[in-house]
Length: 221
Image (cartoon, rainbow, N blue to C red):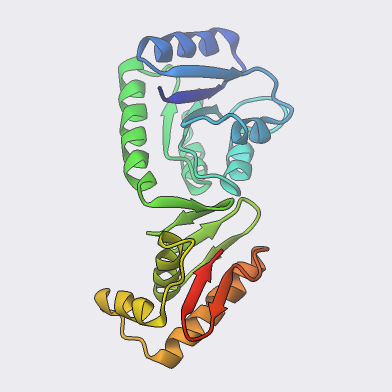
């Protein structure tokens, strides 16, 4: 069951949303304390957030900006205002959609369904190594504290090592994988790419996770 987090300070609207979502088969959770909204969203384990712009303490757009520094959880901004600037700012801060009050319940549910379906597809492109989220399609490694961008070759090398954790991957295997993806790479270039990958992982706080086994290959530990 998908979990929807509701960030709305108006009690009546909050309760209406809970009822609507639960009747539609979702699990609904509401925030009622807005002193640490971004942190509460990140710790909620939700699959999607309905975030009102006009909430106490920190407005919704500021909360969204904080959340986006650490998470890609889908967010639909909700507001009673109709200024075009609100929509522009919300989308620029990373909102997945925007809806105004009074909202049409059917349209809101359709938008939620569409976003969850889309994120399920992209989620298939994401794996985890230790506490690192691997966004393979984007070429990004993210541990919530730091995000690094890998080149195509670096990501291909990392994924081969990741998919074969616990065993040594030979240089020939890595070269073959890169060739299979139409990426020309020489033996020297492979060494350079692995060195750069190691440096980037070290920048994230993971030194020595790629071990070199002489005359054998590499091992991701």
